[in-house]
Amino acid sequence: MEKITIYDVAKKAKVSISTASKALNDRKDVGDSTKERIRAIAADLNYEPSHFARALAMRKTGNIGVITVRYYQAPMLTNPFYFKIIEGIEEELINTDYNLVTNVIRKEQAEAMEIPKMVKEKSVDGIILLGYMPEKFVNLIVSKAPPTIIVDNVIKNPPVSTILMDNMDGATKAVEYLIDTGHKKIAYLSGPSSRYSFMQREQGYRKAHAARGIPVNEKFVLFNESEERGNEWMSKILATKDRPDAIFACNDVHAILAINMLKDHGLLVPDDISVLGFDNIEMSEHFIPSLSTVDINKPGMGTKAAQMLVDLINTKNNKVENIVFPTSIIIRKSVKNRD
Image 1: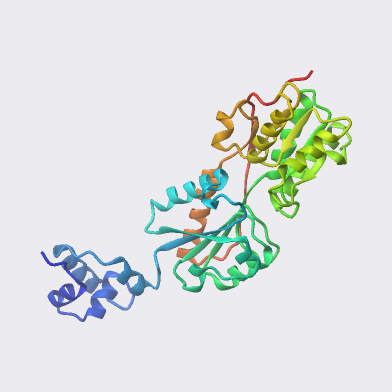
Image 2: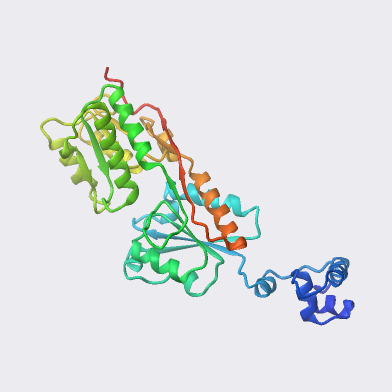
């Protein structure tokens, strides 16, 4: 059986192809009675409009884009934190007519201000910028792109809706928990100091110390600017005369790296040094020892991002929203009570 086309619907309804298309796309320049008659004929013929033709008629692609920048050797979409956010985006878009399209670019492309292909080709109706990107690069995309939502990053201008986690509060609660379990010499191991989330977590680390009246040992505050020289960073910690009794890591990946390096130095976690992470990635529960960490509703962040973007596309509402997801402490086996 041949596929029914818009031509067949128009022929049976005795109207032009343009009128039939307008009626099926609910255009205002076709009367209601004509729309109803043409829709009834289309249903009787079992007509199914092509996604491509409908997109052209409505000037929409039916695609939502997610852009991320790859800073590590491992593929970005295997990052356990961002993977869960994308999972939430995907789950929400299943309930819509939109498809999910991902575009991973290299950090060199972002630094060179190369416009991503999906932006140049206008192949998406909206974009979610996921994770850290240089502010100039974000500004370039926002200036060229359709409606945009930012997840896990902050820019000053122009105003764009963002979805974040409460980094400072999560870090404050984590360090207060370490202090309350008898730890007085707590190190903070971070990634690059330019990242908003890591800066906020450092502030939470300092806030907890101030709240408990404990001075911060600046030798214990270390930033791993290259994201690759973890051994150097751990050597600095262990070389101090009075080594820490706990490590608060900026994320679970750094925490697990720290535990492995402590083991290599003959130290036990948590007996010798406690370790607490941030993100609650799936691996943290199954690692030995299981990792105490800060939990974030990662799929929820993705779901909210998709909801906000679809609403922005459909309503053209330019209201800027800044959504902050709360955090909570997950207590497992990597922290020892020293009281």
